[in-house]
Amino acid sequence: MDLSAILLLIALLLGVGLYLAAPLIFDSKPYSAKEESGEISSLMAERDRVINSLQELDFDFNLGKIPKEDYPPQRAELLQKGADILRKLDTILPQPISDDKVEMRIERAAAARRADAGIQAEPPSDDEVESMLATRRKARKSKSSGFCPKCGKAVLVTDQFCANCGKALK
Image (cartoon, rainbow, N blue to C red):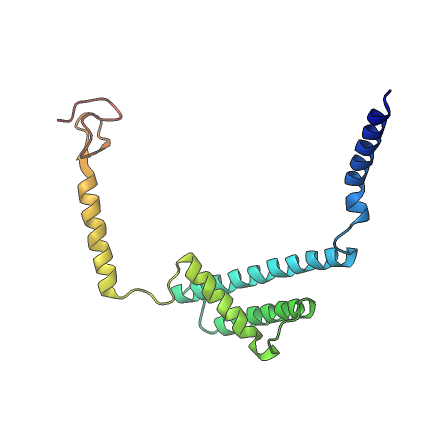
């Protein structure tokens, strides 16, 4: 074998060896940081569950599914759980926010989720509901033309034949 081929083979083997050993030699995060990131993600997931529970509780209360005397204690309990989770997150990732503003952070996060989901904080007025109903009725009138005279299935204005039995409609 030629000397240059042997040197090339040694260099290639050395490169592959370094590539395979790099995660063991050059570990970017210490082990405790990896555990900490797992704890952070579990706390963030728990925070999201509490926020979702708060949203559902508010929604059910607004619908009248939850009695007025049961709503405040349940809401206070969820806010306390969320505040505890945020305090734990603050100990892991220190942020310059005082303890008295922790519950406000939960409220802001819940409001942001409500806005993202398109949930309105206040119900629409009667005039808005009437205008939505009127536009919906107009849209429905233009779509349906009735039923097939032969089989009785619903047909659209644009249909020339029944999709179920094939009878000519025009």
